Amino acid sequence: MSLARGRPYLAIPGPSVMPDRVLNAMHRAAPNIYEGALIEMVATLWPDLKALACTRQHVALYIGNGHAAWEAANANVFSRGDRALVLITGRFGEGWATSAEAMGVQAERLDFGRSAPIDLDRVAEALRADKAHAFKAVLVTHVDTASTARNDIEGLRRVLDDQGHPALLMVDSIASLACDTFRMDDWGVDVLVGASQKGLMVPPGLGFLWFSEKARATTRGNDLRTPYWNWEPRAFADGFYQHFCGTAPTHHLFGLREALDMLVHEEGMEVVWARHATLARTVWAAGAAWSAQGAFRLNIADPAARGHSVTAMRLSGADGARLRRWCEHEAGVTLGIGLGMAEPGTPAADAFFRLAHMGHVNAHMVLGALSVMEAGMEALGIEHGSGALAAATAEIARHGKGEMPGAR
Image (cartoon, rainbow, N blue to C red; front, top):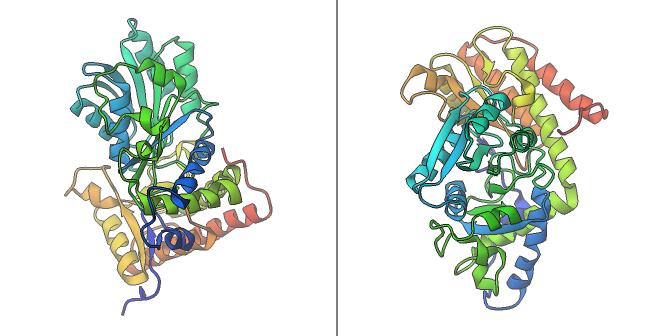
């Protein structure tokens, strides 16, 4: 007899939970795309998208997912034969490198494995070795959605500056946008890649590029830019249609407007970041307790190197897959699969799973998911340490008393 009846909780790292307000904003008839309210509303999106990324630079919006946003970034920055240094800390760093290579870019990989962030000393060594400054850009994920490693973007900019290397700094923030602290201008990021389906709480289908004036100037005349991916008309539109290279994604835009109201204007980015930081620590507190006995482990050992939007975990053998299925079918909580952490079909692949805590998520949702996970381990006879739920609730209590550390 399943206890999964009732409202299910999708705790995967995107698509994330969508607020009723966002869904209701999208639930309307097709609008007039030639004049009136839609055009006026869309004009209000651009300053708020810049506020989201903490930038005064430029922003372009695309109809597409995160992979489309990668392609847009590649098309606008590179020419065929250009070289890029790609810093890999999980599946999605590798994916961006592969995307660039398919478009004719020479991607030199610097791989740091699947359980650690980038090593800035190794990056500095690679940049020093590039005496001819052949790397046009350095590509990195802020938080890799698969490994959940979080990279030090501010530190990476210092390394580039210390080495006197002119490469553009390009960052994939798809898993971290509106979850982890991100300050594009303060950190000297030249191109920022984002998407709608995670921290932004909007259905998949919108990709974003924020880009600096330096990136714009450096990449003029490149030969990969096509009419559809070109960021120039999208960011500097002479008329509504140019923003979208055709018909606008109308209902996604209504949802985006509502989400930005909630994040930028009502909660505020500093508070959004602090909420995600507390919820992440809540998950980690439970994980530390479970790790005291048995095979349970958090994938990233150092808390400072973990993303605040999603946490990758593992058990042993097929226990991760067994736990995921129990949580979904017996209790209504869907956890994420262990994406890209091991070869498909191997026992290690079934060991990994992920719990998302991104976007429209609060304390009772995270505590509920953790309670279900513990109940699943008990029901399945999976060995684990005790005291996880007490540790998690203590973290929430500390936040309530104002004792939490900063969002950073």
